[in-house]
Length: 155
Image (cartoon, rainbow, N blue to C red; front, side, top):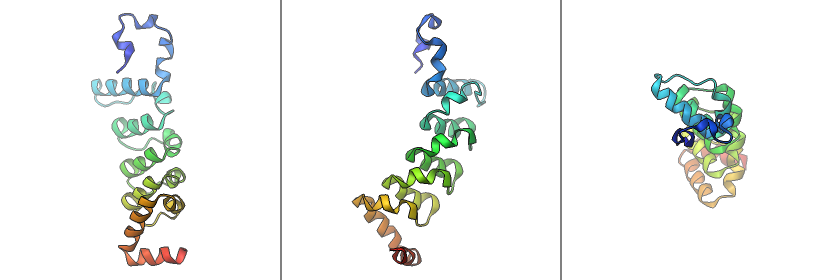
């Protein structure tokens, strides 16, 4: 919800001129514009939207319907949105997002299972620190003998 829309004279409010610098407000306005103008982008709002991983990912998915190179460095820094961007937008391995994904055991596990469909050796150190995901990962590795043998050799 954009609170500026609720005020009878929003231009009189403090920081009205900077309202689109907040990624969430800029994204909200871009979504509203997109519904009204047949799904078109809002280039004037993109710099603000690109400053936060959650809004950048959502804008790429729901407005652009594809990759957004200008925002990828921001998305790549967050394990949640890097994983989702790789899975939903790129639909495959995304090396730029892997350093962030590798630090989070849950997303390292799901990245291996859902995105690359193979071992994610870069995420294995984080997986070892989380008992639940370590066990899941081990069971998943064991379900494919060649993948499991490769993992054993790396130990």
